[in-house]
Amino acid sequence: MMLKIVIGAGLLMCACAASAQDAPPLMAVAPEAAPSILLPANSEILLSMNEEVTTRGDRWNEGDTFEMSVVHDVMVDGLIVIPRGSRGIGRITWLTDKGMFGKSGKMDIELEYVEVRGRRIAVNGTYRQEGEGNTVATVGGVILAGPFAAFITGKSGVIPRGREPMAHTEQDLPVAVPAGYVPRRAEEPLTATDPNAGAQPLQASVAPALPAAASDASPALDSESRVTCETCN
Image (tube, rainbow, N blue to C red; front, top):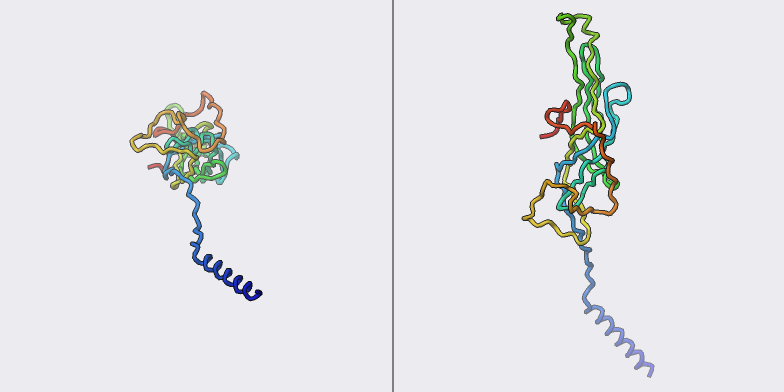
């Protein structure tokens, strides 16, 4: 009787082992990648100076950084990628104050990055600000020259608060999209209308908007401005 029990147990173990060998192996299922959209390189980001930067005095020196704010939402396919009010950082790369002989103050600035929810997005943009210099002056119709010219000074270079330099993204920026996102159809062109109309923010937490600029705020940079762009095409 005991022999039958032992033989039966052995047969049962063999059957279980064979069944285990015949079962198909479990396959690892890779998680589905979250959909994303792309903010292309060289996308424009309009910034606004949060404070005045000047060659006058000793407040600013080469290497100092200054803060800016994004003026408009940067959008792709109706989604806000860079909210208005996001912080931007620039740096003074060269600075010289006004001097004798009509030398005006000059400085170069570089736009470095924009910060969105703790992530730094690299941008580029290099500008030069020059004060309006005076090379000669007259007294009674006689041009001053020689040692008198040493008393003729130029003007300091000033980038006022509210001035709006344009930055460009350095590289393509992939951005995860929210659940339920419906891509824009190919036949739906991007328009230059109000960027906030119908916009879907990527997250509920959006950086606060800037207060309205003062009425005497400086206009945006243009081709006639004393500030010149050295990296724009």
